[in-house]
View: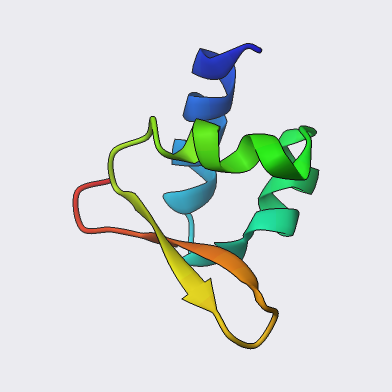
Length: 66
């Protein structure tokens, strides 16, 4: 897996206006499997996982140090 490419893309996505993405949205944006998203996101400082009760899946939000 090309982790550096995904890390760079995640930083660009979260540096924009949108501050929250569900796991399935990130999987679609990055073009990876749903189950690969947590492993990629945990390598990027400044993005935190939170449980999204609306969708029932994990959402990722932009932290202060991104």
